[in-house]
Image 1 (cartoon, rainbow, N blue to C red):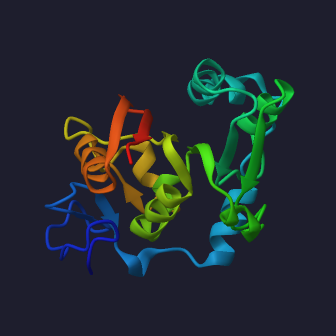
Image 2: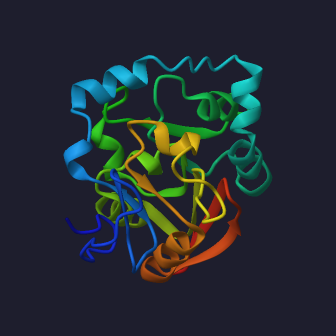
Length: 207
């Protein structure tokens, strides 16, 4: 198997299910353990993502607040991987922000790929990508110059016990990032890193 982000041969195993990429430092699930599309969709449908749930709103607030503080209502936004309950888009639209949705299972309008965007947000999506290189290349191409990519995903560090880590136990989490993985993406895609925490990432397109 090769890494689905950097195309390096995957040799080292983190555990029986995940490879540890030596180049981009991602943790990549063995493709033989991927769920089928039907099983993956069924798993997502069990999520109780109520857009009016205050806990859900608070969880996603880093992205929502960043957009409110740094983008204009007239800027064009894309919620990539919006899922069953697009809470961020719901809150932004209440503030008259112009955001469109895309999700391969729940909002699969391919026409959104014919437009470019001032910002793209992706909350708890990147860890589900079975071809992160393809999707990140596509998102980069959809951003206008100086556009921003906002990502929420939980980064791994080696002080965490991977075997018992809750994020690793979700069967749909097939690509897990370290800080170094985000730095690799920024270098390859020529992004400026504006924020990089263990949960929230903001990248700006520099070309």
